[in-house]
Length: 187
Image (cartoon, rainbow, N blue to C red; front, top):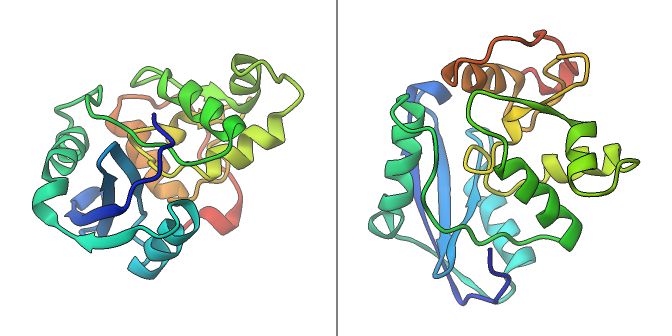
C-alpha cells in the first residue's frame, strides 16, 4: 500500500452480470490496483480522481495490463475466489488508509459495523468519519466496504447502490441483514 507518485495509470473494463452487464473500470499503477469505479460512474470521474490523487499522471487505456486484476475480480464475482492476492496502491489520508486496511481484514462472508471499524482503528468516537472513509474507498470489492453494515444489521448507504451491496453479501453467503437504508443509495 504505497503512496509513491506514479506517472502512469492504466485502465480497462470489466463487464459482469452482477452489475447488469454495465462496465466497471479498473485502474492500476506500477504499484498495484488504485481505483475501481461503479457502473454508474464515468470514465470522466476516473480521470478526475486520477488528476486529484495522482497529479501529473497519464491515464492510459490498456486492457492487457489490468487483466490480472480483472481476472481476480471476475473470479470473485463468479463465486470462485474469496481472497484477493494482488498489490493495492491506496491513495488517501492516513486515517482513510487505516480504515481501508481495517476493511481489508474483514473475512469474506462476515460483516462489521461502522463502530467496530472505529474501534479497530483506535478511534472509537469517529464512527461518522469511518463512514466517510468507507464511502471514499477507491477500490471497492477488493477492499470490502460492502461488508460494513449498520449496528442494527441494516445495509445502510452504499456508493455502489444497495442492490449491489446486497448482491455482493449474498454472493459471499451472508444474509443476516435488514434490506433497508438511505433511499438515495437504492440505485
